[in-house]
Amino acid sequence: MDVLKKCKKAEIYTLANEAICEAEVFRDMADELWLSIPGDVILEAAQYYTIVFYDSISGLLRCHCSIGEVQPISDERISVPCQIMEVLETTQRRQDLKIYLETNLDLFCTYIPSTAVGIPERIKAISRDISAGGIYFICEYCLPEGSVVQFQLHGASKPLLLAARVLRFEAVNERDGKPHYGHGCQFIEMKPQTEAVLRNYIFRKERQGRR
Image (cartoon, rainbow, N blue to C red; front, side):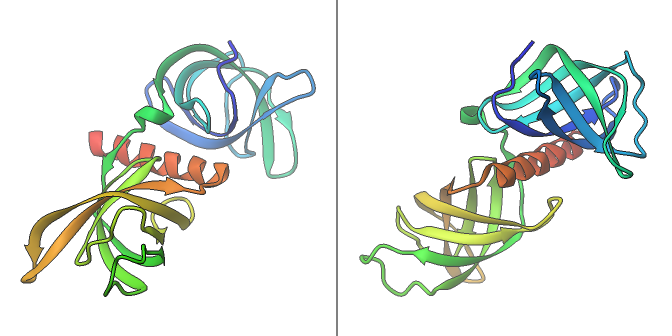
């Protein structure tokens, strides 16, 4: 079953949904699917696992998979052949998983339409929710549609430098006696590696929220 279009990252779980490790995804010369994992991880050949693939085209795919015999790559990495037996769940890019996330952001305004005045280059903001496709944040300035901001998101496996374009804005409740505005934004110019890490982070946070 070949359902992956462009996938480089995955997470391996037991059938009881216990996290085992992260994996790099690659194809061999025969176009067979392989997973590269840390050398100290023990996977049993001919056994079944739940694997979540992060595909930049197909989205997030949770699959029932079988694993083959381990092959050494280096002193620190091993590889295992993987066969997808069944796709259990798919989250398409247009149906990105959205999670509640309240964290402080330091925004750098890289583009503000000329019609806007009084907006500084750097702005403090608080996020409200995030998905692999965009973010909603609140700040004391009203950024018009088309504005572009850049910021670092912390908490993933590594800090992510993200850029987002404002699609809409709205007035929200005052904070500290000042009016504030909420902004719905779409991520732009995101590299596949960054998207994979972001999807991984969002999926982990969503699972933590279920517990």
